[in-house]
View 1 (spheres, one colour):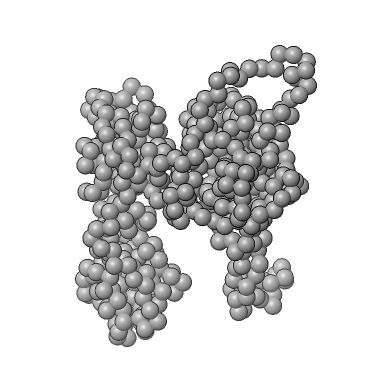
View 2 (cartoon, rainbow, N blue to C red):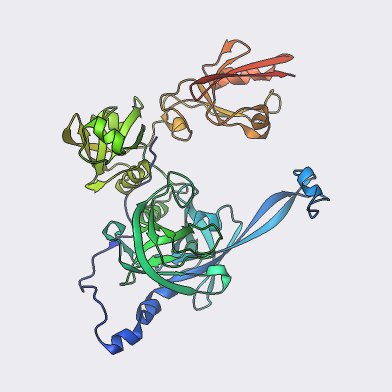
Length: 460
């Protein structure tokens, strides 16, 4: 199922620079190297110190290498302060900055230190864990140095780039390289939502949230992760494209606090060589649609199961992550032009991006302490609920949106459909609450999970 992101760009993408990029042609120019560029861009790259309080189990065997494995989870939870260090980039003179979610997520205190040693407190105004991006607002920030955003769709493999950040906490550091790949997805963060620019500019721990800039000093991406077995840079790093950053800033300026995504209501897979032949395609390209929700905006526009979507707004898409990225750039409320192949014919359709409808009402509830499974959270399946869950698109009934600690131990999983409880059909969240409030001495729950029927039985 495709999910996406929002719309109007408040920080405009920088217009193409009039002067043509060229190779230094004189000894004087060569001797300068990247010094003028670094002097221009580095002041807008900051160090970020974040502090968060987490609950930790205190065990008397915590430091014993042998017994600690037998006493995991033992002891009373105690608050523990956890510090993190990363980098960030200022994007406007009034103090909007961007960094990675994993640098500032759930932080209770954020301190931003600039290259000239000025310090600011900062607040997270919008963040999203899936995209690994967070927008900060620096308290009292005025007239700050900042970087312009470049249209990341213009970036080409082979371009010279600089990575600026604070690796290992040693202080601001600059490394150089080239763009070594585009449209990398599902590689850097271990999920299928990522879409990255790949670079061989050395990126190390602490560089997260730092800037990847072109030779004109414009931001093309936010450094987020590396591909490494040792934890150090092996010459394969990943940056989140500037176009996605622009959408985050736009939403933050519009007053959003959580990232709003358009909804596709579709499932599909990349077209490989075998599929291309069976679909009548000359070359393997695009995504073949395998399932659609009845309320999908793509279905309303005329897309059908079996269609192969090859382009979105003129840009090729060859994976669900690329599709999500293109929808994200279009934004909610805007029309997107898609090109698809059907029975050997090429067609173009216009699809209006929209959020997943919350109809019928989800009626999401969390079961209380007076029920058999306290903390279990359930909701009536609708597109808005389905968009948050793994599994099939056309789910009906009551689904588990959070099993909770006790529910997880009992065998409930995210996305489970609660078909029956003690032989009674479950049609609404209220049915589940009533069935689990006083279930008797025995409890039987029939679940639909991944197309299979699973039964959980308990003695209370």
